[in-house]
Length: 141
Image (cartoon, rainbow, N blue to C red):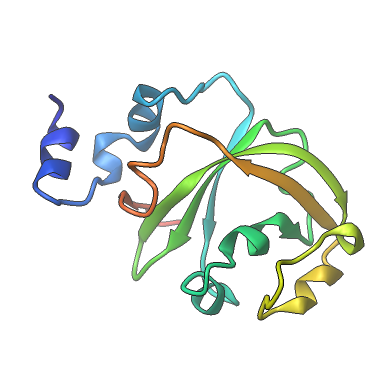
């Protein structure tokens, strides 16, 4: 049992010192894929995350951040440098932003003016870490 496993059993957060990619790899993540670590913070995030619209939010992008990627490893920013792991999302394709569809009752329709709408699917195998694993994002937060 790793130090991270013992900490999780005690309800302690996992930090970057435990190696988030090592942790994900132990759950089946393939580091040879083209991927990007994504931290959503500020702007609309404090409004949309608690209301369950973060996946819709991340699908709409102004810039081609997810082009040529197999997947994204997604986080939501917390206070300071902390970031909460949301999940691994496979990038299935991209459409123009005006073709994207938000969910009913989405609080922020203006996202639909984004240039890109990414077709994302939550990857299986990371559920026990999603919404529970906190890392130190570092100085770039």
